[in-house]
Amino acid sequence: MVEEYNFGTVTLWPRCDNKCVFCGMHDEKGRLAYPEGVTKKMEVQLLKDTIDLIKKGVKNIDISGSEPLKYDKLPEYIKWIRPKFELIHLLDPGVRFKDFEFAKRVISAGVDKVIIPIYGSNAKYHDACVGRKGAFNELYQGLKNLKKLQEEYDFDLILTTMIMQQNKENISDLYKFTIDEFDIALDKISIPFYLTGQTPINYSEFVVNFEELRRIILKLNETANKVKRFTCLHYIPPCLFTKDELKNMKYLTFFNVQYFYIFPERRWYKISDGQSREYRRQVYSKYCSNCELKKKRICSGIVMHYFEDNSNFKYNAIDKETYEAIKDKLEFRIINKEVSQ
Image 1 (tube, rainbow, N blue to C red):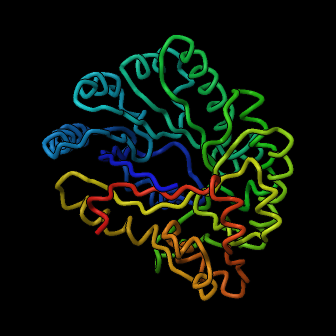
Image 2 (image 1 turned 90 degrees about the vertical axis):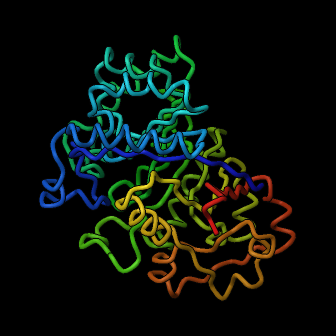
């Protein structure tokens, strides 16, 4: 299945309270380069950037950055943009939703979708990934508040995760946890990215190789076949698995994407746009020439740095028979097609 979706992005970059192991801001030097909260300069630029997207005719908007909920006037901002966009999505670590009244102000302003990462089913795993004690308990309270607000307001609550060294043994339990606690299956399970040529110093401390990734996903699949709730493997190549393993994945789907940003006209964003293309760059292996997914143009290959770091891995090209058996579980999405050329 091929889908297209277009959106513009605005960002706010206060110093995030979390120190995620995979994030370029996780070390103290990187963190101190950002102010504690949203400055007046950030606020003015946010308004300018939003106006620029409106002039471009962008219909959907993502509010992102490090921790945009640190902007105290975010509810007022959302109310202002509500008539101007069809969909408003908010991406944030989610801890500030622990304050029910603030959460209500944000949600009642008119958000369509709230997207929050969760990295563990308990504090041991989640806090290890985000580098801050107490983070899981705060997020848990925030998610409880959002579930309560769904009784009154119409918005989607999306939970995502990434597989890392710090939580790899907890992924199956996390999948079950979000369903048991919040009746929400993880929307996507992904792997960390980084810019080619800019490997983080602590790379080996959080990235999982493909052999381990296979083992983790197969364990997850055992749980998924019991719980029977769908979740999506994001940028995790289906060719990591054998034909029989893929056919046995009844509730795991695969998501591959060509992803480009529509940013406001500003120099910083032009740099970021180029980096985002490199950040998500994918390449084909020698095994891809015989793969139905490449032939049908519904796969862009393997994320560049994972391809390089798993040079001895033997991929299983998807043949016609396997493709027919799993095609309903494959999604290839083009984000912002008009800027993808």
